[in-house]
Length: 83
Image (cartoon, rainbow, N blue to C red; front, side, top):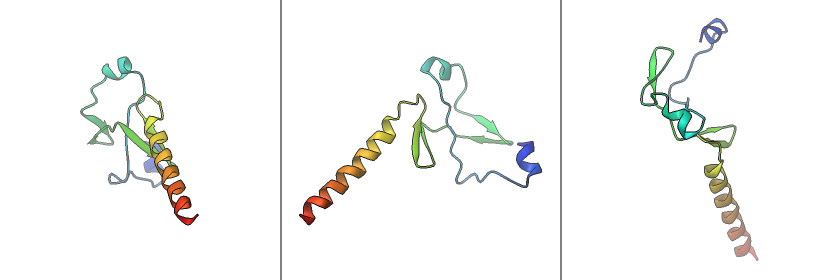
C-alpha cells in the first residue's frame, strides 16, 4: 500500500474485488470473513473478474467457461434466426 500511496494511487472500494486463491485446505487456514486491506475490512468473493477472465478460488475456471458458453450459444441462436 505504501507503493500505491507514493505513486498517487488509491483503491476504489466500489470497483475492487478480492478473492483468496488456493485449495480448500489452504483457504480453511485463514479467516476469510474479515480481511483487512489498507485499514478497512474487505469481503472475499467466490469469483472475481480480471481483464474479462473470471477467476474462482480454486482456479477451475468453471464460472468463466459457463459464461463463455452462454455467450456463444446466444450468438449461435441469433445466427440461426438470420438463416
